[in-house]
Figure 1 (tube, rainbow, N blue to C red):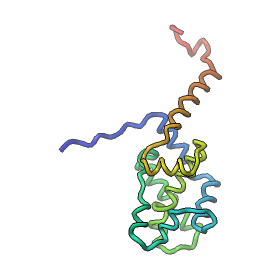
Figure 2: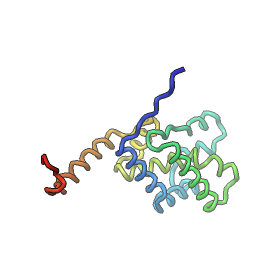
Figure 3: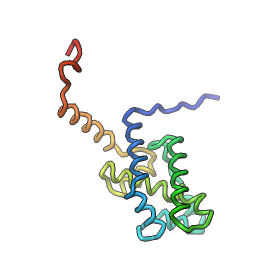
Figure 4: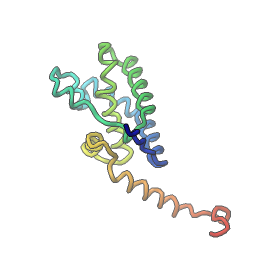
Length: 162
């Protein structure tokens, strides 16, 4: 049996996933997530979670490997469960499943919207498709070029051949 190839993450992907983690733990994201569970913020995932139909429950499953590593996912899920347990009076079953089924995708979409300045629909598409929006790559490239042009290397950084 062939060994499964592991995708090597680029520095940009690593940097972006750290930004996503920071955004998920931000006060504004926590307030948004509380709004979702208290139903002051609209969330189809929250509605699917409350639904008893198996077809709705299947809609809750997403792929996150393209944004976060397994270790990062485990860290965030643990953090979300603790936050839910401390912040809301909910049944035990919510603490086990709700963070993974509802809050994780909502938090990721919140982070993508904020970091990439995209719509909720574009962030949702990223989760459903299992890949980052192409503008992430374009945005990273333009950021790198902008930073370089703003801060040209001095003579010491150019090296012998520069």
